[in-house]
Length: 96
Image (cartoon, rainbow, N blue to C red; front, side, top):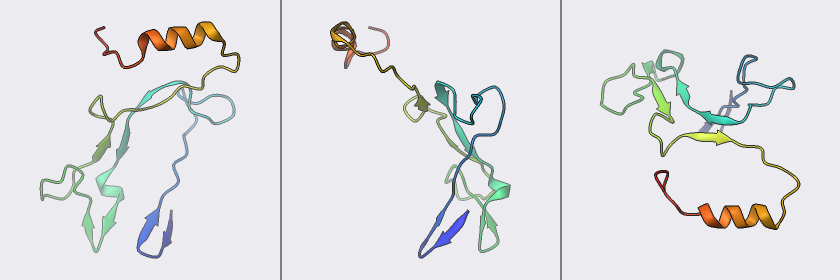
């Protein structure tokens, strides 16, 4: 963590485990980020992660499907068939 003028910058690094490949990168998948309230404070108060006015709540990014972030590396051999498959699925809902 580094402090800069009017902001704090935090660098996230994936810990070794089942979701990390052999060189420290996240494996393909959908992820959720949780900031632990007791590990974040400002002026003596813990984080109010859910913004309900009471401190001590974790902040969860990715709890809602729309918030989830992901890593899907992709392929290097994209061809016309790949573009066609993409076009058939683009802007469709999950149920479609």
